[in-house]
Amino acid sequence: MAATAGLDQGELIEVFKALGNPARLQIMRWLKDPEAHFGEYEPIADRRSVGVCVTHIQAKAGLAQSTVSSYMSTLERAGLVRPTRVGKWTHYRRDEERVAQLAREIGTSL
Image 1 (cartoon, rainbow, N blue to C red):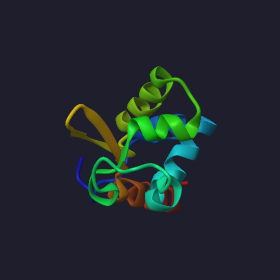
Image 2 (cartoon, rainbow, N blue to C red):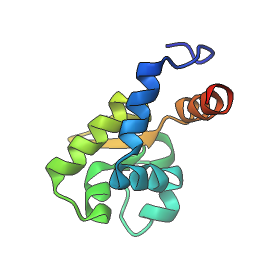
Image 3 (spheres, helix red, strand yellow):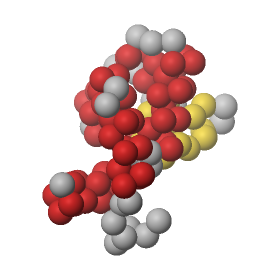
Image 4 (cartoon, rainbow, N blue to C red):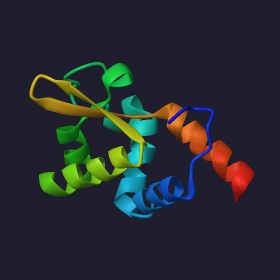
């Protein structure tokens, strides 16, 4: 999907469903400033470029690994986060372009 194209109704619904869960919404807030929210965890890779290791998200959220994996997959399908593999670990970072596009879409169409 091009960054200039508007989101269709189905895409908006997927985003709202993904953010409708309090834990997923909190994870998105944490990922906005990973250094502030995950500073107590030793980074495996650069948080700004590749994101936060899913094990650190799990530890901070206090949720089961399978739950966090499911939540991150939901956020990824909605286009809100991007995964990066570093060795055997998956890291996630926000897709800031997509978040900005969503903000514009909400401002113009709702």
